[in-house]
Image 1 (cartoon, rainbow, N blue to C red):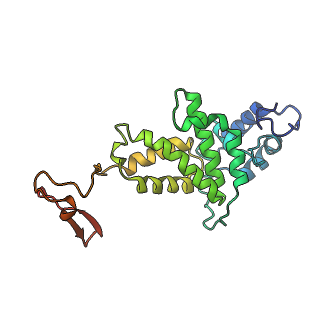
Image 2 (cartoon, helix red, strand yellow; image 1 turned 90 degrees about the vertical axis):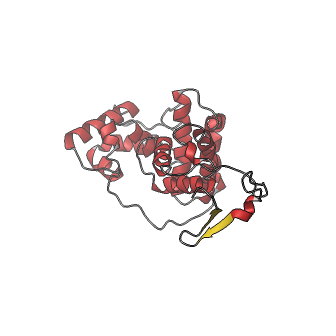
Image 3 (cartoon, helix red, strand yellow; image 1 turned 180 degrees about the vertical axis):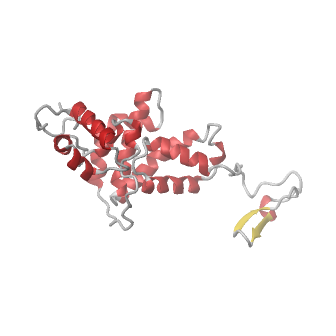
Length: 247
């Protein structure tokens, strides 16, 4: 079985180049030439043998070159240069393809539990890999992949908001989904997608007020009136909130 493709395609030999050697060659070329950024074309022009090996053998479950796997194995300083400064295509044709989604889920079927529980670094890594594959497919325009990514990742976030750093997100379900959607669209290669999302929520959550769930039919112990009778509309913000004597 070819470890670079998960056994889904046949390895084609390029002299003495293998996966580890391809990574070594790419790291060495990046250190020597010191580009401010690099992409697929740069790899092709700078390390042709390694490029040929990568494009033939390092594949996703959809048969595309898995550049995420390559970049994740590079030295940290080189990872940051991947696609830096390259403009993102703003208009992407949207479509729905369940076959693409099923290919990802079938490959990682035994590991989907990692969105609910992670007890080791390996499980965190696998969860991140699944997330990235769904995110990349969503970025191509597949709406079903985007929906599945959001559904799975929300399971993670529900666990995070029990922690001290993200506890202020409790009750902001719509905003959480908006931030997940935004991260899916903006993620290029900044290391772990899961870490990228966590840090985004950490920063975006500063200043959020914790929400307490209650029924508007409940009576206030202070006014002895239903909470719904204390609803006021703020014309400046467009928000409806409860009037409080503490204001």
